[in-house]
Length: 122
Image (cartoon, rainbow, N blue to C red):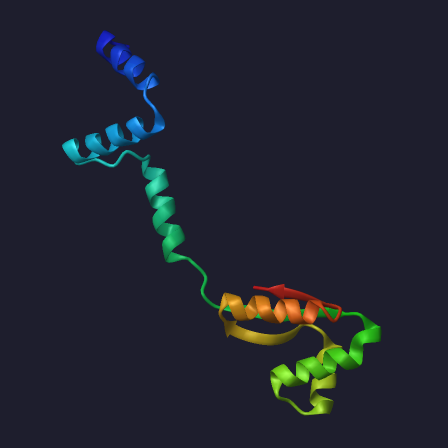
């Protein structure tokens, strides 16, 4: 390592985080560069592009003693007839909602977990 680089490193070691951040920003502007490894830039772009916006709420199981309450709640959500809702609930793996936003998915999950259901949000 050259003497100049050692001197620069010694100066950097004495800097506060704020000073180091200012230095990094100044170097980026001066030399028109990005002070991050290429992998970090790629990961950042992929994460932004793949952010999930639609979720499915699936009931996979329920406490048998709470069956009637589960059927009532599912019927309210699904808007189906009693017999049809009963059959869907008993079959398990019931999609309570598909393509909903995260807030709605979490609201449904909480609502059904409170009455003894096992819920998966995908």
